[in-house]
Image (cartoon, rainbow, N blue to C red):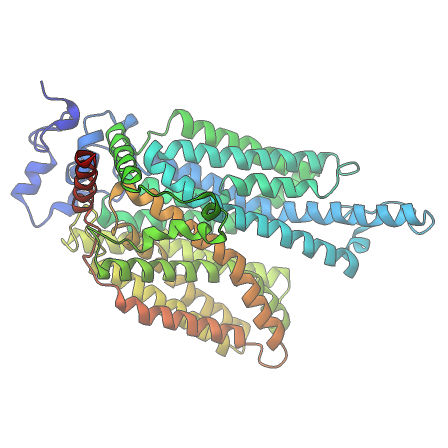
Amino acid sequence: MEPAGEADEFDLPGVQQEGPRQKYQQNPGHEHEQIPLLNHLPSLHDVENDDYAQDFAHLPWYRRPSIEWILVPYLVLALIYGGIISPKINLIVDLVCRQYYSVHRLADPSSVLTIPSAFDDGAHDLCRTPEVSQRVSLFMLIGDLLGAILPAIVSPRLGALSDLYGRKPILIIGSLGSMCGEIVTILAASYRDTINVNWMLLSFFLEGITGSAILAMAMVNTYATDCVPAHRRSTAFGYFNGCTCIGIALGPILAGYVVEWSGSIVTVFWIMLGVHVCCALFVLFFVPESVSKRRREKALEKAALAKTARRDGPSSMQYLNPLTLLEPLKILYPTGPGSTPALRRNLVVLAAMDAIMFGVAMGSANVLLIYVNYQFGWGTFESGRYLTIVNSTRVAFLMVILPAITHFARGRGYGRAASNEGSDLFDLSIMRIGIALETSGWVGYSLAGRGELFTFSGVVGAAGSVSSPALQSALTKHVPSDQTGQLLGANGLLHALTQIVAPVIFNAVFAATVGKFTQAVFVCLAATFGAAFVISWLVKPHVYYDADEAFTSISGSTTNAASAE
């Protein structure tokens, strides 16, 4: 009897002979019209993707990886990350305020009668002084640096390990770090009178050292890459990006209602921790691993051969070189057998564009809110309404319009490749249209003289959010499946670096031009996206890394070296 892993693709266990493959043969022009956008039952999806069919098609549905398994947990985690931002900042303001006045009280007991709290209405104004605000700003800068630099170091390495040992262990490691950080936050919120604010840096450290949200985003995209055919990845990535937008939009509102209902900020952190634990347990016990044992063994074999081929390893002094932080980026510039100049150009251009877009998204949020307050006099209500409209537009385009367009285009037979054979014209077209829309949005921001036009420009730019999943989908199609974790881990490194640099640049430009040419920051961003649109035409379709050629070359070199010895 043949092993299940080696069954012929036309006679898979669990797939009837009168199933999707036969229908595909009889109606070759309409095969994709029968494929649901997110399918978890035996179908053409299972048969077309060779790795998926070989490893999982014979298993019952509850043991087969599918993005439905992680879509809901990721949405819940996105709500947690979105909801915890404001309460955590308010807690830090309170702790800094208490510490500041405690020091003054020790120096001069008559200067401060009672220690104020940012959560007490009567003492709230005492925590809004320039001295306290300055200390809060400095503390948040240190925390943000920890939350960006540490993921930049660990995300690429953990992403590469996921190719060797599976996605689930890395997801659990990231969850454990976040949960430990939330426990520290709960202790700080519960014992505000005794705990020093510097303990909150431990929370940032624990989250950062396990990859934080950057690693979580990379891992869910990698999981989707494992179990979704290449021509459907933009849709899957769009769902995850839409979940992120929902979390940012609804998380703060839900957290605000919890605080109002319970009368305590600590309740928010307890709920966040409990939900986070439930999501981690669900992933641990119910979510199927997307990297099969066969693929893990193959990846470990490749890693061992590559290690053997590198006779001269780095010295201890080379490990101390700061440039080793950038070593994971080598996957974006592959050399040797299996690679081509066009492949290297595609990977570098796509990764650079993705980093730019992520940096703009992370770095422009605060500048936008400061700008509308200065330019239009918008308060909390007007700013909240603007954010709701823009984020709702993003969710609609990512979770409704993009899947519909993809289903229509792919259903017509456009771009039928189900394996990693390079980006196709559909992904590139969506990516370029999205970037053009985002460029138009930034141009509109710089020209808008009224709040209504500013909001309309935000809607146009939000429609361009479809470019991000299309870009990520195109990027993953350039490397074999056993390197997607390493690739998206390196992408996480770029995201972390832009998370450090972008806010500094945008805030510096705004601070230097406000009152003179306040729209300068939007002009710069429009020019940046315009440049990204131009370089997007350098990406050549149907270019990919030939893994078989590279593996044959490494195996041959190792065999020759062993024979010589």
